[in-house]
Length: 262
Image (tube, rainbow, N blue to C red; front, side, top):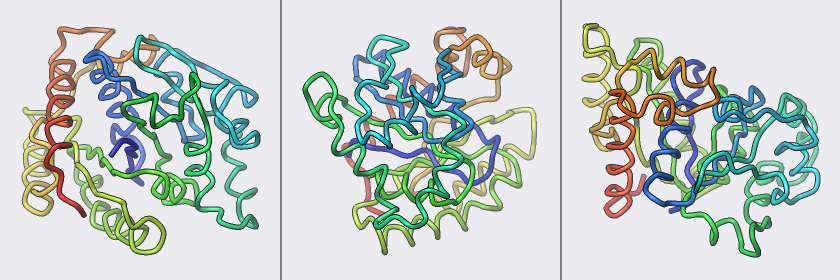
């Protein structure tokens, strides 16, 4: 399993934060990571200090059916295929295309980097998806092998979780039989807040089989880091959230050895 999607149809739940910082934590352990920003908001790019226009983004890569020349390298071992606002129009453009659900999958399978296929060159490919259950998100779920759900420790985030899991199962049944629900990350956890505790316990009760033991605490440093174009691990390596992401990376690697199929 090499390609993982970070999915949640609700916005503001820490999806991009989880993707960036888990990718960075793994890169610090000498794994080569490609972070694919497939969200028109392009937050994964700005969060790593990279801003691009449509001629340098995944939108143009799809038009050319090759992403090699658009891949950036903001940190050692961490690479980024950036997005742009032009991706908004992609959904309309895809409607009448045959096999429109497989556009992203085909791009990742057919593209090369440094004379190797993407899957051969990179240890892991992470896809940051938009906060919706759109055709773009369907493309993400069709392209990936494992799904990681970041769950903000608040009531509304928990409320839509069952619907999201049903959607993932539907994609597995109809479009991607190899899809695995790999993990659920509890993020933005505030130990002083009773609601955070209750949401975490409820998630563990109903989704115990996928919840990561490592919980990412709420920290102002995590919120500040993107404004400096950095991961929290580079912005403040001694922060409690930085330590949590390092621990999460270790748990991620361990789970790969024993994962259960969805």
